[in-house]
Amino acid sequence: MNIRFKSWLVAFAASAFVYSQTSAQDIATGLKQLDGNQACLAKETFEKLATATPSADNQFYLGYYYLRTKQPDLAKAAFEKGLAADPKSKENLNKVGMGAVALAQGDRTGAQTIFAEVLKATKNKNVNVLQRISEAYTGYVVIDSMKPIYKTTDPAKAVELADIAIALMLKGGDKNQEVYMAKGDAFYIKGEAGPAVSAYEDAINVTPGLGKAFAKVAKIYWGGRNYELAQTNFKKAIEVDPDYAPANKEYAELYFYVRQYKQASRYMDAYIEKITACASDDEVLRSAQFNFVAEEFSKVNSKIAKVMSSGRTSDVLYRMMGWAAYKENQYEKAIENLNKFLKQAPQKAIDNDYRYLGNAMLRISPADTAAAVANLEKAAEMDTVDNGYKEIAAFYNAAKDYEKAIVYYKKVIAREKTPGLQDYVNLSLPLYNVANRTFASGPDSLALREKKRNYFLAADSLYIKMIERKPDYLYAHGQRAKANYFAYTREEAMTNGIAIPLMENYIKLASAAPMDDAIKANFKLFYQVLGAYSVITLKDEAKAKEWFTKLLEIDPGNKVANDFLNPPAPEQPAQPAAKPPVKKKA
Image (cartoon, rainbow, N blue to C red):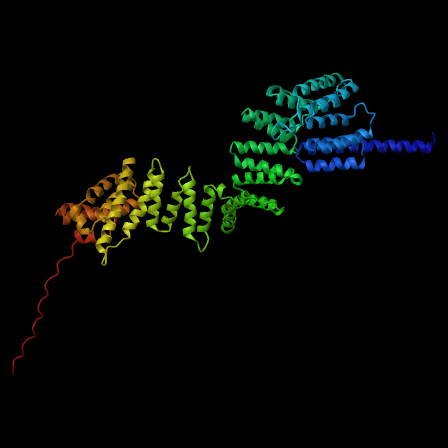
């Protein structure tokens, strides 16, 4: 052999070694991408390898990619090319691939025949062959659902072949974590969770950084409602293999299930970030849902806009955009999208669709109040959990449209099985306010006087209910006293004295409470009324003096009390002017 030839041979061997190393690295990268839900990148990796060097190995991994992505016809074509590239190989994994295609297509008998031929040729002593056949019999269990992607499986056979491979590895010192993964998958689809976890843990012992094994263990614990161990294993999967995106996705789903929405959103965002190039519209929308329940509405809008920019639209997208816009105070946008949703899918409408639409309409100018309230009423009628009439009543009360507030607060109470104390308070406020601003004057003075009295007494009936619920409720006692005083003219109130014992009772109760502005204001009114009643009706000046003295203690400038307690001195009659002296005539 001449020197030149030797040099060429060395260079060829070296380049072949480098290529072999590079190819192996690329295959490992492609498999990691495939496991990590980055199928689009795996496709690119394996297609480049097969195109650049259409070797048996490269064709096998391209076919394997097609198998894992539910494209058995394309897988078959790739395996056939692999067989043609190396027809004499005893190990030829492409023949195993042909058997796997047969299983995927439901041809169990054909698959068994092909597998038997390969196992015979390798004398049941090739770990890679045993592992790939075992995996094929599991139907390729995916982490998302922990179910095979193909229906034709034989988990018992998968376990049998995995055990043969494991025995060979233990004898020869080989390491192949995928054998244990196939065994774990087989046990899981057999319904044997314990042995499945053990097999996955064996895979971890072989490769401690195997994130997918931790994730599958976590999924099993999750299925068994052991959320603590599920979380522990999801965390471990992410810790040992940060690039294994599905662990983030499944961890997010677990948080979503247990209603920890901020954490769910965080991990789903991490998942989308890791698979950005391959994220499907459905995955982006799912992540948008997580953002929505976490109230991260800017993310919702940007993700939906991205999906819709590709031409995809649906009624649900309009709903999500409408809700998100409302939460972001973008009311015009909320109205636009919610109207589109309700037009396209009125049969899908739920209470919040109408609630957010109605509230958005109230927040723009000029507001179509009638149409907005009509939507809020629809929401209230549909809502079986919350009492939507409270929202409408509160709106009218804040707008000082007390008559309408009364109508809706009455609906609130009618909807409640057992109205609460606050429900009675809420209804009493507009009743009292309507009465308080009704002035009996003009030709309709009698009717207005009756209206005023009726509203005050209607409020009083609610104060009575409040006191029945809470006997020491100072607010209700004070309001009762005022309602029963102002329901009548001053002359009538001084005559009938209905409010007097109510005021006295309030003073007794309030005297034991810390003084505040509300109590002080009531005391000023009640002391003055009680003093006047003592003078006018009871003719009891001593009692009147007692009340007016108390009034001056808290209101020193009160004119009524001062005038009673310190009456001005009576005016003296004017003296006639002195006549000038008469001058005597000289």
